[in-house]
Image 1: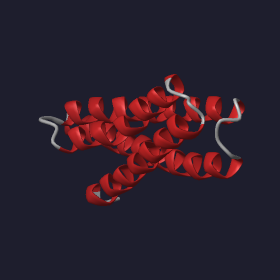
Image 2: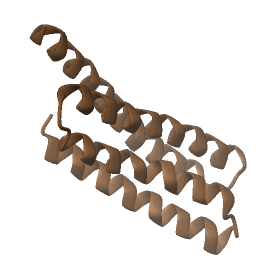
Image 3: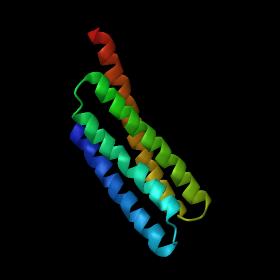
Image 4: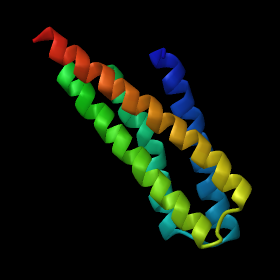
Length: 121
C-alpha cells in the first residue's frame, strides 16, 4: 500500500481521536482517559510518519513497531472507554474499525520490511 495513502489514513484517524477527546472533555468531563487515548491514538500516525523518513531499513522497522504498539494501546483505551460507557457503540465500532485496519497495515509493513532485510543479507 502506498505510504501517502497510509499516512492519510493515520491523519484522518488522529483527527477522529482529537474530536473524541474534545467530546469526552466537554460532555463527560473525562480528562485522564481522554488524554491517554489522544496520546496513543495520534502517535500511530506520528510514528508512521517518522518511519517514512527512516535512515535504514532496521530504523524503519523499529519506528513501525512503535506505531504498532501505539495502535495496540489505542485498542485497549477504546475498550476501556466503551466498557465505562463513556462512548457509544457506534463511536466504538467506527474507531475500532479504523485502528484495526491501521494495525493490520502496519503489521504487514513490518513483515515485508523484515523479509527485505533478511533477503539483503
